[in-house]
Amino acid sequence: RATLHKLNEMAQNTGMTEEQKVVLSAYCEKTVPWLEDLYYKKFDSNRLDVLNLYDAATPIIWNGYRMQGKDGMASALQQLPTTAHKLETIDCQPIISENTPAQHLILATVNGQVTYADEITNTFNQVFILKAEGKDLKIVYDCYRWLSTL
Image (cartoon, rainbow, N blue to C red):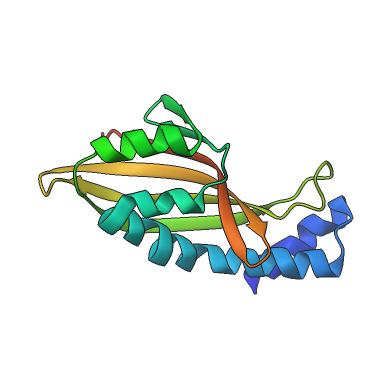
């Protein structure tokens, strides 16, 4: 409900219709379980399956290294050891733009811990831009960073 209230405030400046607000609100609410139950569980169990969640031309930045699309990511994923993600926060909000009013885009920021090969644990931050396509979400931008602790 808070999401819809925020959307109402933002929509006044963008000319969004009531239907667009409801649709974007529904996608934002869908994003958290989608990331938890689909993306990260797949990443930790059978990570090549996450490639189906990406748009074909998605730019992917992993700790400062740019990979382009599914082919670049597939190669990198095959080189990673086993992982276990522990999510701490997920924040989702719509991207509302006068330039792309027909697109349903969502900004999702995820913070947590990732353990590699049951040995090395890093704090991470991952930022996604997701595009709603029918009832599905597709990742159109992905930036993953390990964070340094102070």
